[in-house]
Image (cartoon, rainbow, N blue to C red; front, side):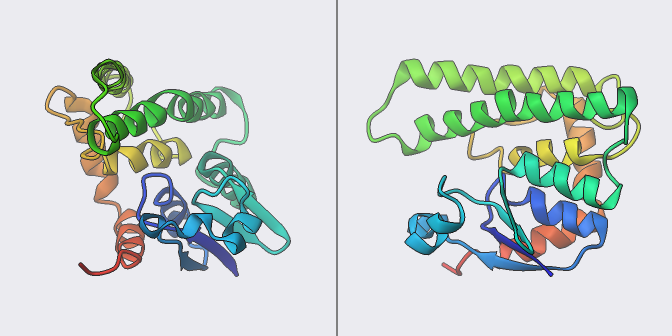
Length: 206
């Protein structure tokens, strides 16, 4: 049985989505990052980087959501082409998300919502970068049904995570019709709905 340590965060949701799509059984173990549980000694022993998600598969402890997605896809032989241009395009989007869209969304949200003092330069920089990367992805989806081609892959799962939490980054899809079309299609997938329902139970009632 696989164990997933997670919370209802943009990166965490990617792992249950992949597991639901792949039909794999897993235990979902909550780590409440709002209470700082990711910094507890027992969790830091599992992931020294003190972040969710973490996947445990037997003796393997794997961190970083993109690495987990690749591992699960290769473990099952699904959601990632085995070779060729299709595989390269999936990795292109995974790297774009990990180096571009994800960090821009995270920093945009932090400086607009969580910084102790307003930082206009940082807000302008990261808010602009978040909107710019949305434009880049919208252009990609103008040419493709999914972000790496005609088929749903782990690259779609990676992008979905932050777009699911785009309100935190104060990003909307008003000027991104191709992302809006894609997002609605991904959100409607039964596996995605099951994953969202499961991970949402980790958030304590107000």
